[in-house]
Amino acid sequence: MSSLQILDLSLNRLSGIGSLFTLAVGYMVLRLRNIKKNASQVDVPLAKGNERISYYELEQATERFNESKLLGSGSFSMVYKGILKDGALFAAKFFNVQLEGAFKSFDIECRILRNLCHRNLTKVITSCSNLDFKALVLEYIPNGTLDKWLYSLNLFLNLLQRLDIMIDVASAMDYLHNGYSTPVVHCDLKPSNVLLDKDMVGHVNDFGIAKLLGAGEAFVQTRTIATIGYIAPGLDTQFLDRS
Image 1 (cartoon, rainbow, N blue to C red):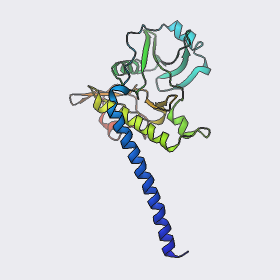
Image 2: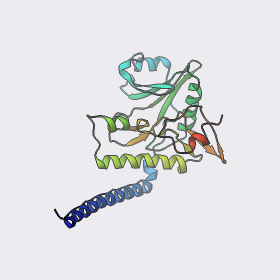
Image 3: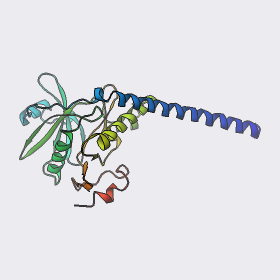
Image 4: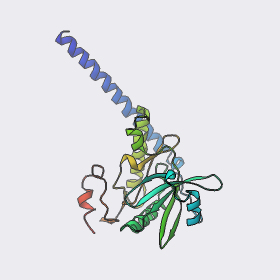
């Protein structure tokens, strides 16, 4: 094969890659425009006015916090799948009150999530709280974490699904930064904190170390350091080292 043929083949490949990139960008732009156009329809209000669920009800719904019901765990909490007597599914996030910072993490999530309203954020249904026990009852999102889908040998996301999830997460971040009265910085945005519902729509989750920014001041919510490699550049020194 001559050098001219090799060059021609290389240019054709680059052209194909460029076309694919252009199509992907075009798809993302159109999708974002549709999201903004239908913003009033896609924002789903949080369930309000619900009575707090009791510890006994949570215990029964999770089969006494059976390990088979465990969905995941974090720095301060463990999340279980629960089923109420009427068959309704939910995810119960239990905070380990023995750990320093768990109470604060619970209070932060309650404070932030009770006022947020967006289709790409995990919704809070109600809570269960006393001096010795703290839990949030969240909507159950059946397809698990984005992390599981990206790194499992048995699961697969095609290109359009990946683009859609990217747009879902970007929409949630845009709302947190620009669409809410007090800007919110998530601080730990990573694949394991993005949940996928039955339609493979992405929902940003876990606001335990989020920051509320207001009037030029950064409010440090916990001493927890976010996951290395995922916290936004500068936040580690700007926010997390101040107490």
